[in-house]
Length: 267
Image 1 (tube, rainbow, N blue to C red):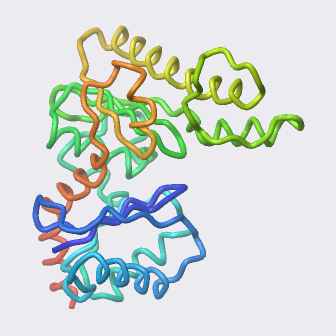
Image 2 (image 1 turned 180 degrees about the vertical axis):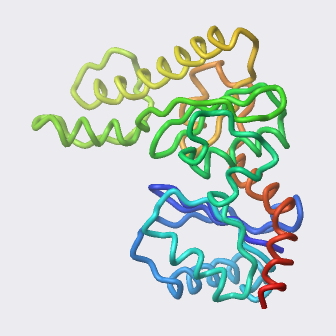
């Protein structure tokens, strides 16, 4: 049994896998770069005990995707503290089962690499992966599953917060689907701008990506907010909320045994 961790800017997602099958989670924890190894261990053992009979001591390995530098030391320390082998995706950028065909491969986020691996093993390419998180990312994989580039846009929740913080007379609002496109008051007008604006952004960028690539690409939606927008657009061919976790599990299956062997050799 091994643990996958997808630490994003807003939330961290944790899950247990037994080979290809998720056996626990996913569990979400608000991102906080001040958390210590002990805090992660206590929280994780608590949710594992609450949802099943697993223990930290049962974990053979941890595979980590982390885009929050302040959290890196505690997350890698967690693996050491429980005696588990660690596979850090960021450190494997040049060794993954996909090629990263961009100018600066080392700058591609670990979560985006995990998504590309997940798309290859679960759905095949060519494809566009749209991940709705703190940022909305569009990542393109070719027919062989290789990562060929992408687009980064602000996430919809951040757009709502930016409106309220930058304009003195605009209030904070919830990210919700408005009843109509044209708002009859300030709050529904703001919600419409973000909600329908992001649907327009997604549809427009998918169209332009397909035109530039010059071939059909399936569109895979993932991330916490993907299902919020899916009801009002037919752009998505596949909705896979666990794509990142599946990619991390696939990375462990390839690199975990090697990591364990290396740890044993060092000991």
